[in-house]
Amino acid sequence: MSLIVQKFGGTSVADAEKILAAARKAVRAQQQGHKVVMVVSAMGKNTDLLLELASQVNEQPPARELDMLLSTGEQVSVALMAMAVDSLRAKAVSLTGGQMGIHTDNSFTKARIQSISTKRIEQLLDAGNIVIAAGFQGIDDDLNITTLGRGGSDTTAVALAAVLGAEACEIYTDVDGVYTTDPRLLPEARRVVVISYDEMLELASLGAGVMHSRSIEFAKKFGVPIHVRSSFSDTAGTMIVAEPESDSAAVCGAALTRDEARITVLGVPDIPGTSLTIFQAISQQKIPVDMIVQNIADGGLADISFTVHRSDVAATLQAIEPAAEKLRAKAITHDDEVSKVSVVGLGMAIQAGVAHRMFRALADAGINIEMITTSEIKISVLVRRSQAIDALRIVHQGFALHECPADSKSWTQIKAARAQRGDVESMVARLQNDALERVTLTGLAVTPNQARVTLRRVPDNPGVAADMFESIARAGVLVDMIVQGTDGEDGSTSISMTVDENDLEACEQVARDLYQRYGLGGVQAGRGIAKVTVSGIGLRSHTNVSAVMFRELADAGINVQMINTSELQVNAVIDGTQAELGKERLQIAFDKAF
Ligand code: ADP
Ligand code: ASP
Ligand code: MG
Image (cartoon, rainbow, N blue to C red; front, top):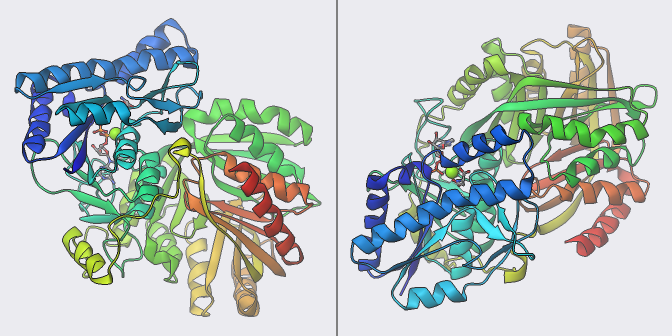
């Protein structure tokens, strides 16, 4: 008998009628011959109300007590849901996280699942019950109640689907699927029929609130197909699976993190260990960092900029203050009026010129880009918050995301193709049940013979980046990493990129032409560098991965010249002569740490 997990979000259980409607879906699935596990969120805006209440009695409530409080929201829903199922004459038992054996670590408000004991759920299912599981919560070694972070019920659902070997995990929500961007922000957004795990993981991590990004880590590790669909209709939604919807599209979606903030540590020594000191302090607080840019040293000093979510600014500043002092940094500045716009797509890993399409679209609309980072399947730019929605719209239009790609494939077609290839239905989970949410590393590689070109003091005006990357593409040069960050106090920026050593001359030529045309501060070019790439799943959300990488490279006396991070990869650019040593040391460090 097959098993399905059905998850209902807050709006889908907001009142008695909706709870009954959800119960009917579960009972119907059971009548069709499935074993059914429901995962339920707190009703409506209950979690927000509880948080508000907490802040009224204490501006900084203790995290343990917050979890104690927030977990009650889901406890209310599961009890009501079990009563609703009972009223439909089906058997149901509700369970809290602790009762169903979801064990987590003890990082309150952002706990990670360590193991799930499936015995009790399985016994209840075998006895003919619909099991109703409280989302978003677990229990630590000392029996404290923990929560997984906002939106965490998705992760509970997919984790249960993974360990129970469910046929699929259905996510019932208030939209009828995953769209090319949040349809509440852009009504022209298109519902996609299929999206790959990798793309969804990046999109969710970059602001697409429809799925909790950690749920996609589980789905990918265990090969759980996720069906995102509407609680209010029976139409098919979006399948999140291993394959993408289209093989030709460079970009599958765009995301916005409205409330982003940029922090810059000015005037730190450009020597091994500097980044480590800063990012270790942040990672200890489990704060995810994005868009790390270190500009080229001026007089032996460097500026390090990075972005965090705006709500993490205070905690981040507090965390890095001692580190900055130790490094004798000149100053720490921050700007919390910025937003991050990103595009994601598997196609861009193999297609050239995707970045400049994005920069050109923004430039034509007069929107200035304040910071750029690229990774294998994503490009992120920072813009003024007042221009964020315009920027999102323009980028969405620029990649014609409202149009269905000509080679769009349905889930049925993908399954047929799998069968023809003789693929096994799901990936074999390589993990033990006692290491569920541990970081998964899948590879460590060195790309030798790279070169770097840096343009200093680029005027901070719309269009410069677009012109630059268009000229470079015209010269037939394939650019790999791009980072742009602030360069000094006059608002100008510096743009660095890596290219293959063979392309260095051509790229340098273009850079020198641009130098003339724009009156740039300078062009620096260097060959003999290498890129070290760590691949895995959920690398950004596990904040310690870059910390381990920085520590190991620093201990080996290796300076990190450029870095980018994503959920799928962390890339560090280092001196080519140290590449093999770097790889060896990282291999040992990762074997030990993860
Ligand atoms: P639930 O309470 O069911 O978990 P959420 O509010 O967490 O629901 O997620 C659903 C919401 O996610 C939608 O109402 C939509 O506004 C938002 N959203 C953000 N990005 C996307 C996207 N790319 N596709 C669909 N919905 C999105
Ligand atoms: N109730 C929690 C929240 O609002 C968890 C969830 O809904 O996924 O964040
Ligand atoms: Mg949600």
